Image 1 (spheres, rainbow, N blue to C red):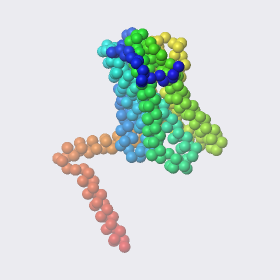
Image 2 (cartoon, rainbow, N blue to C red):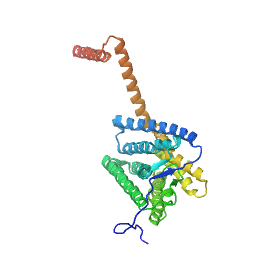
Image 3 (tube, rainbow, N blue to C red):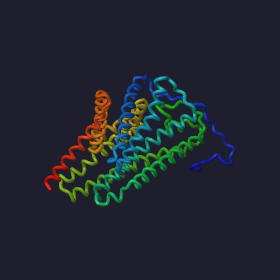
Image 4 (cartoon, rainbow, N blue to C red):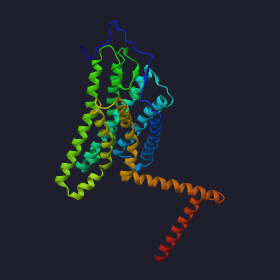
Length: 352
């Protein structure tokens, strides 16, 4: 059996349906309202994180390049998934064209996979910052972090394109009903009536490459950090260093633990429960990630407070100027400052 059998050079016709029907679960409208609330919070939170990193020059470090990319992926992934899910189940548009379904699958899986590799980038950043603090500026540069994230994007896009390409060689003739909340890869290839062994290999291989290996790297990096701190640092120093990892560890737990539970118990739980678990696993981390980073990261908290205070000062200044007949408060402060400097200069000259 050829693993990636192709129709090139052979008189083979693949049967592609005009559309698929996404069944979901019965009475999903109330659940969709909840998803809409989660989506709004996710969009606001990730937009705030991206805006703060962009506006505050102090946060333009390699670490926050990865954080910005994580917020972008969360925002992009939820925007690719939730509005379409709401359209399907809230407005009863269960029919989705064949090409649209594959496009839907591509964007959902790309963003879900990139979340995993973003956590790898942040884990590497913490590893170098704690184990090799004197070499951090040399080892983790903007160029390195941008290259690392770009390589993750290229790998994920190619991997998902291969999975989508293999789906196009399947003849769908068993059914057109997808028992999921989106165009799920596993549900799609099982609807085929020709050989889908390559798709089965992909469904087994990709979780290892995109899920298990990143998780293994993250766990080993934190194990190494813990062992190193136990040897060379006091308890207080170790706790202080580990506090810089709390936000990242929470992100890892929020992303990987639901994945572990869902995929471990996949065959043992009811299909409806599986659909709800998968949807929550896809949608909840992008909502919680910005909340955790704002609450747990001192740099972002300080930056948010500083930007808000500057914004409020500008508003109050504008209101004062509008009520004072157009006179500029800033100009008045500037003149007062110049006058104080002149008086101070005169006093120094008199003393001489």
